[in-house]
Amino acid sequence: MSDVAIKGLSKAYGPQPVLRAVDLYVPDGSITSVLGASGCGKTTLLRIVAGFVRSDAGSVTIGGRLVEDPVTCVAPQHRGVGYVPQEGALFPHLDVAANILYGLPRRARTKSRLTEMLEIAELSPSLTGRYPHELSGGQQQRVALARALAPAPTVVLLDEPFSSLDARLRVSAGREVARVLRHAEATALIVTHDQGEALSLADQVAVMREGRFVQVASPSDVYDAPADPATAEFVGGGTVLDAEVRGGVAKTAAGELVVEPAVEGHARLVVRPEQVEIVAAGEETPATVSEVDYYGAQVVVHLELRDGTAIMARGPASRPPSVGDLVGVVVQGSVRGYGVDA
Ligand SMILES: Nc1ncnc2c1ncn2[C@@H]1O[C@H](COP(=O)(O)OP(=O)(O)OP(=O)(O)O)[C@@H](O)[C@H]1O
View 1: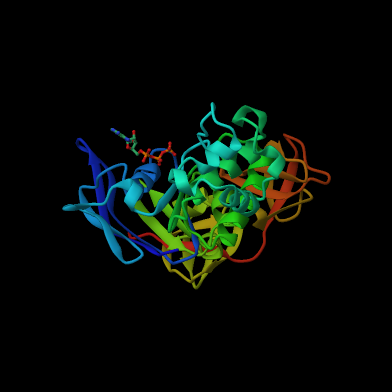
View 2 (view 1 turned 45 degrees about the vertical axis):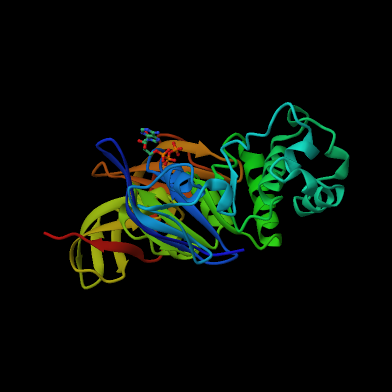
């Protein structure tokens, strides 16, 4: 396998810039997820790396070999890249075996290669004669991955690979695909708009907004130290409060909050929903429950503070409050602050 180096990559469709001088380094044998809202340019980036779309400026190097720049364009089949398109896109008229062996030269379509790919993708040999419509969504994803891995690509690109699966299957299919990629020691780029998926599957998360990377870091750094309030809201959610910070402390509608890293003056503060504890009315900051989203083991409670500020709490679902309840809220721990220039 190989590393991928993307430098100053730009692309516009007509007057509309889609990628704006994007840099990204994916180390050999690691998984990077590209996380961003719909339309921010994720698929375009992946398709340029794969060789399906030309860039306007910048370069892509795979394993030290230049494959894309304004004068170079190595054909997709010569880039050593495996591509798993959205929803797997298996050939419906071919069975599992034929789908997996499809990308190999005829002489390489051997039973032993098929067995090897079934083992890597943790698929039972009893499935080889089945057609895609006879497989579960998760099995289809693993067949699509086995097909992409069969020609032994140096890099695997996956575009929203789990978008067609339901929530429960997404988690298990994601885990299985990550295990297969790690087993194959693949260098992989996974495009997703699902923050849980991005954080749980990858070694590195590249957060994209409007054609730029706003943060490229480990999953825990992206969650614990988001680059800006918008990234914090997108990754993990939370409430952004405007406040004046003096001596590392801010007086806010949600009480006095300790701000880290210490910023001074006007700032935007991010309060994570798991930091907000709901207590009995009369204690701490009063709030009214405006909405309760029930997720089984957890609830997300939307609250309105006295001055109209909306704040969100997430916690265990035991004894959740009801809409209209008067409660108190306490923000636990310090909050992240971002200075705002006057
Ligand atoms: N072939 C094309 N011609 C013109 N505009 C395009 C083309 N392909 C994509 N776009 C536009 O470029 C922008 C980025 O598209 P892209 O598919 O890269 O986004 P994305 O982040 O992958 O979105 P999604 O998560 O919805 O797939 C969008 O505004 C899209 O409409």
